Image (tube, rainbow, N blue to C red):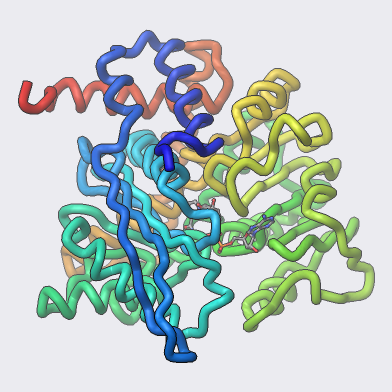
Length: 422
Ligand code: NAD
């Protein structure tokens, strides 16, 4: 399968090229950034509960390690492939650079629907995947984290497998771990909280504030969507619609977010089964077209495309997911005046608090939640201001501006380190 066939990879390259053109970046640096440093494909045979053996495809891609060890999630999803994983690793390179972390960009995944496996089978899959990519990861090399279809339990199995091989508890090998084995306070909610912070910065920029008339729709009510909904509803916003892969729910007066959160946290808590007075069921495509102040695509990539971009009526789009808008949709909606908060900024809260978790693990010294959230807020606030500045300076949309800010930092570091062997 060609490395570059996915929509997300094409869109990520287009973003890089737009930014490079706007800021007249060194073409030799841009040339290097188009390719991953290292892409590993592994086969993961596991014994299923019925005694048979099934083999799954897995990947770990390290896109660029100039600024530090690789950092990026592990995705368990049926659409995982080398091209998508490479694109996601590339976005991680730019995300870490943008928010000033001493980390490179990486991503991993297994082509599997985790809903089809029992807990025991999932544990086997995670441990064998950890063994297969084990030589390439580690606290100084590459540090995975949760993504779609994986969670803190997955990270616990991964950390345990790696630690068994090393012979000691290696806290720094993954982030997004449970607190009792070296996780960080605030990590679970960090990505969604960061999305909510960025929406607040956008409101500040527009001299507006979030209040009881602010309406929000969230596509993807998972690890990113839920905490974003909780934070924004605590600030008074009305979360009028949320969805998962089974469909969406809508209430004009605002949904009860805590009730939804509790419902979805139960095993098989799917939104298609959520029934409450005053709550209607809607499709995912209807949700994306709702007339709301803020739309948060927080599920998967390429959901707003040339096909449906004209139906989008939101005033602000906060990209909780990685690459939820294709390049055509970004151009069309930016020109229409929609304020897009780019993914590498909007969802960077997760990697920022992952960085705090990694640092705490290496130092064996843990911070309180208040310190974590304050530092997260301050890093995102500075990065948001930098992106706005670049957008004004180069007269480009926020997506291109975020890439410009990241590329400027990478360009400086890559030039200083030089090309090996020269
Ligand atoms: P998750 O698995 O916890 O949640 C994903 C949600 O999206 C679920 O509700 C799922 O049902 C829904 N979904 C999946 N496919 C869908 C579809 N086709 N239509 C509608 N809904 C669909 O995953 P997550 O960790 O919340 O990640 C969501 C996005 O955010 C991904 O793009 C991920 O890369 C990105 N992201 C996650 C983190 C993190 O810390 N978890 C950090 C940065 C970026």
